[in-house]
Length: 82
View 1 (tube, helix red, strand yellow):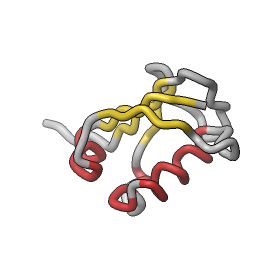
View 2 (cartoon, helix red, strand yellow):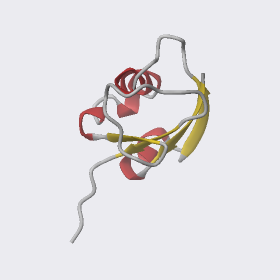
View 3 (cartoon, one colour):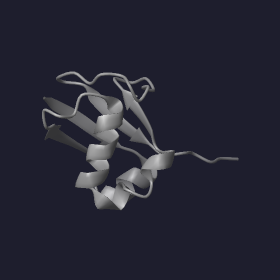
View 4 (cartoon, one colour):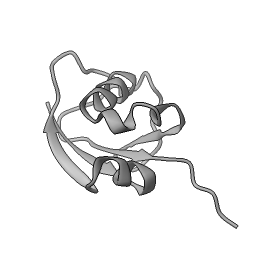
């Protein structure tokens, strides 16, 4: 299945670009699967994924949520502000 992946803030800096389209392997079915996959493809993300939230189609997703063809998945690191 093909998805669009958006990278924000520190995740964008880690991979070097803000978005990509990617064909996911058939074994990737859930948000948790996707998190492991993207960390294996972009090794610079591996150590950050524990604190990264994933949004699916503009809302935060649960790890068990299923991914579907054409989804937009966003990697959102923690944000600090003042």
